[in-house]
Length: 91
Image 1 (cartoon, rainbow, N blue to C red):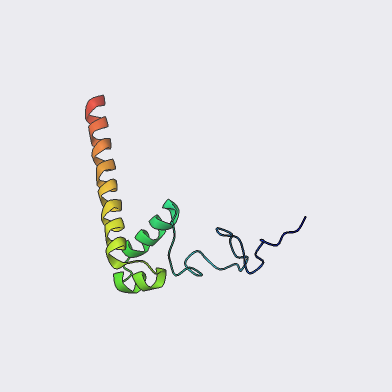
Image 2: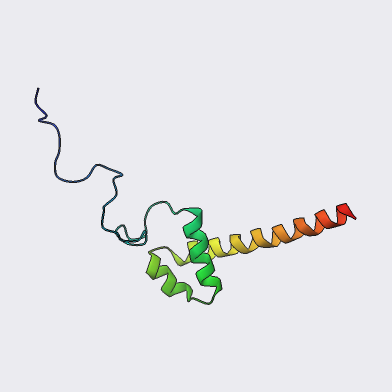
């Protein structure tokens, strides 16, 4: 049997390159981001990083990063409300 239809031009779709490069390189920031990576970038913004330069650094739209930052802050505020409600219920 022959493998005449097999392409040897490059890695299979979805394969990762063994370059040791971080996830922010290689694909121009495209693709799915893990929750850990999203949180890391949001925390970078909250620590005072410039939105536009962070957007360029990670290849993500400034609007997307801004939305993630707002969602992160809203989630934190909601968690604080839940704690207060739990304390009130326990009293």
